[in-house]
Picture 1 (cartoon, each protein chain N blue to C red):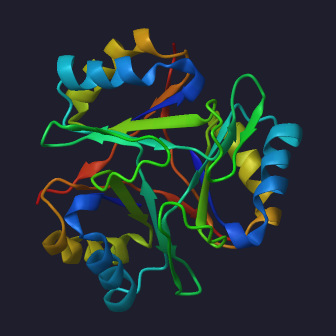
Picture 2 (tube, rainbow over the protein chains, first blue to last red):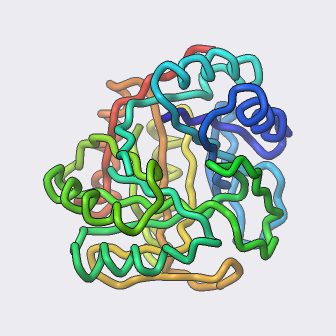
Length: 95
Length: 95
Length: 95
């Protein structure tokens, strides 16, 4: 499982999704929008449910076989801020 | 920790929650709605915050002791698409 | 990676964020709001996207080096309900 931390203010989501989908062909990716958080800058972003704030955290996650995930991580490092990618091993249950 | 990937278009969430709650009695479950993503179909779903799109990714997660989680995984496989369940070991901090 | 399960009805989020940010200085934290779930109470909370329900699950996550995360876990136990904190090891990719 690979997780990438983005911010809405970054405008980095679209290029990242495109890279994962078109270039790397990972099997799937999901993006979740946070309602609060703080990051390296130390600013706490908070929002009401229908707030239109555009600097909230975005968390993108995808999973793939270990080798494909490793290749993807090395590739996407160019698109994200340092230390904003974490990964851990998961078991993919076969259907 | 067990994670199940669903889509809003599936209508699979309700039966799954019912199974986890009523039949398996897992200690808790949380469902988060993605704001973007793509899956096996290769389609990228994206939404504005108040979009009423109904084919967004849903990520259901629950955790339990390893043995209970394993039983739950085997049971819910009948309710979800293949390769849409992942799991990993976590430490549950006692209170 | 440390995950804390909260409920909107708890009003425990603000003190927890303040503790993580001001006192513990963890490198970042993200809060995601669930759209459905059930917990120890066995009640299933469900919401439409623009529902104003205020008892939905909140999932707070943060990550840091193992030692800092352990110190943070011990500290925040005073602020959350028992068995509502889980943790697992992740690899932080250097930039």
